[in-house]
Image (cartoon, rainbow, N blue to C red; front, side):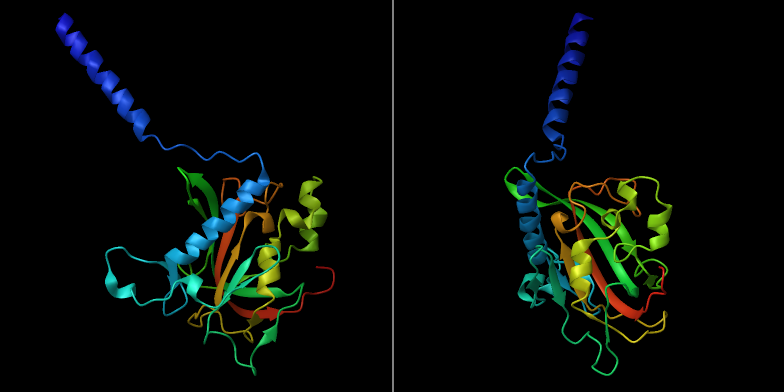
Length: 248
């Protein structure tokens, strides 16, 4: 009986040791926000090296087993611009509206966008900096296939601010993503494409957390998780824009 007990004890100790070895360390927020900013920039560059755009402009990860994407260009090899905020945007060649149909995007426009948007958390794991967590924010491409109209992360209506009950929720910065606003205005909108029109995504916007919500209070959007320290990746086509009515 004593031997059986010792075998069970030894087995349980061995299991406990293995469990601790296999546990993944959870994300720890750097005390210095400059460290998080550095993680964001490094993770974005790694993301750009690990992904490409398919024939419709969707972001795709390179496969380690399928050779069909071997000749695709990495996002980092495509022409891109980096804004002062650290936000990077890529305009996809051949996917922009023609000069006769393009519309300039204004500061308060009502946008209609076909979009996939994700929030990603950058961290350092054993010296390797990369995105370690992804949260889906918007996906009209794989969802109902209809464009999103008037996203709050571009412009929040005045009625929303007026109805807010706390100091934080009365601020535009609680809803709007500065880096997205700044970069999307570099693109042109199409002249109100029909909502059922097949998409051909115009490009990519990569927003580091410092140009999003950083560590400030924020609207949760479509997730129950905090977006604190999260960067954002937008893959989109602007189907149209419209003037915003006075008072909105």
